[in-house]
Image (cartoon, rainbow, N blue to C red; front, side, top):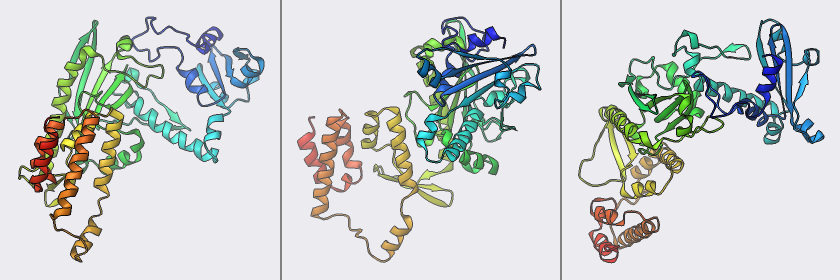
Length: 428
């Protein structure tokens, strides 16, 4: 950059969000680099070279505080000669180096700065590999291919859709036109874990912090900004977790998607909800078919069981029934983050069920497996009554719950309890 370009780039809000931009422009507010930098450190210096001239400018929060003046500091080439990264500029015709100094927040957050800093570097590397994976992997053409290095090592994109795996099912691409612009939608159904290569399984485990789960993957100019959410069009569910829907939006539709300053949040525009809902449902149905082929329920006795016994070829596993009326009512009273937290907890319960301990205690006759006595019936009534009262508090579907009690565990074992609840709460 020239000195004039550098000063403009360092100015907060250097470009209006309403100003017309190049279709390839990844920016929006003219705030990203400055805000991101000063959220992590107290001093950010940008050193840039063009036409053999090197210029530098810095925002220094300590300097601003001491002078009581929000002023940009400018430096000559000699003044930044000892800065880290400056040697890079001596070997290129043009280029830019951004230097962060004085990591105050990180020092406050951790007793071991070096370890905390290295942890952040690792996480940042993974984040960049995911967010810019289509640029890094050359998925959008050679002309847009870029290389990013961390400590001299080239990083490679993390493809959330596993498009190189032959078991991945890409569904038909669709286009939605809005305000004379085109939104492109491409669903994928991912393979089961058993169909992943050892390398893919290892990568998924190593990148678990990125939460590559079912949902929309929203790209603004091929840069990933939001992922792993259905925007409440449908609920996250176990059978649908192989479904991912890639959505490409141009930078000209920022306002209707409500893209935030950090370009890390967006809201689904009302005018395309119906179109996307239909696409999502088809994608999830495909995902469910993969799972239904994989395993089937053992019990088919028209009883709503708390636990489903799933036969997976020659083995069995236990899953909490996500269609329990109580659970469905609870989810309807929650927002998406709470639903995801609940789902994580249910998965934790399933994964940590003490099968071995139960097996040993049953084998040694240390557990009471007798189902019914007077005390059990009273406990069942208390459970039913408490559930109804809680449903009333959250405006849940009390009628549906009461109607389903006769075929729902454990109440299906206590017809008198069902009758008492109907008599006392049937008109609620």
